[in-house]
Amino acid sequence: MKCIAIQSYGPATRLQMMEMPRPEVGPHQILIRVKAASVNPVDWKLRSGMVRWIVPLKFPAILGFDVAGEIESVGAELSGKWNVGEQVCGYAPSPPGGCYAEFVAIDAEHVLRKPENLSPIEGASIPLAASTAWQALFDLCSLRPGDDVLINGASGGVGIFATQIAKIHHAKVTAVCSGRNEGLVRELGADEVINYHEVDFTQQKQKYDVIFDAVGKASFRDCCRVLDRYGRFATTLPSVETVAYSVFSKLQRRSCGMVLASSRKKDLQAIYGLAEQGKLRTIIDEVFPLDRAADAHRKSEDGHAVGKIVLQVAD
Image (cartoon, rainbow, N blue to C red; front, side, top):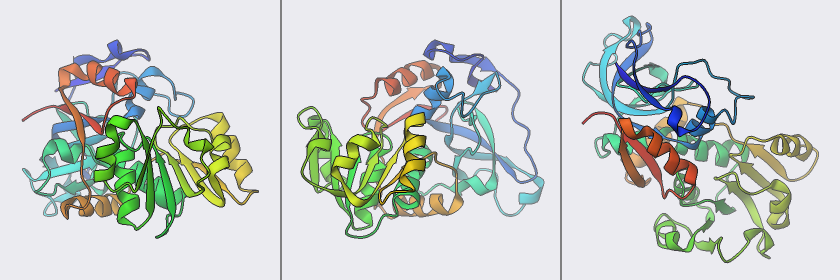
């Protein structure tokens, strides 16, 4: 099969089109013929070696955690439960993922039938980013109706889902983004918008019950200025500082946590259920063909994508 893989850590140019064997399918796995795979910041962090101290890779490595496609075959223990040709979405649970390829094999517990109202591009844009938002808000921040919630990076790949999920669950949402994206985040449910080019949200008088830094650019120490005395803070940034604050915060009233999303069926079912009902929107910034994965990574690394970046693997 054709795939995009890396043979060493480094810049986006390390992403190369290669021929590799089709994955073998275990008894509880589904082989998916990939139509679309989305790009997440964790992909280029893995590629660059930025997080090798947490997640070391074995080479050659095929990146990509999110997939939408068609069932090519099923494992022996799944006969009668899934059918060849069904349209599905999946979240590859183990790094490096393997979805930047024509085929990927994933355990059935991490696969769902794609809602008919979603295209493969839309379906592939959801799993990791929406799970990150979901687990940050509920697992780390114990989101409750009526909470004052601030989302930093509200127009990014994770932020678009966090903004909607918080609003769906009856929070008052303040979105931090650039001025050009104010209209979008208001459409997604934001009650208030802070343009980070003009205002430092950590210097506001407003206090928040929850602050979710969806882009990993704010420190817990700075956010404490605007965090309620019993407030909860979560970030996507894996750093020594965050880990230290997380441990220290257990002794304080405020909490600090770092979200490293995992593939959980119950979360995916809830998220895709909202998408199927039309309550959760996908926002696609740009679609790249598989052979332009390096360009997709560069765009993601630039940090100004609005919504998700997706690779189209097949029609």
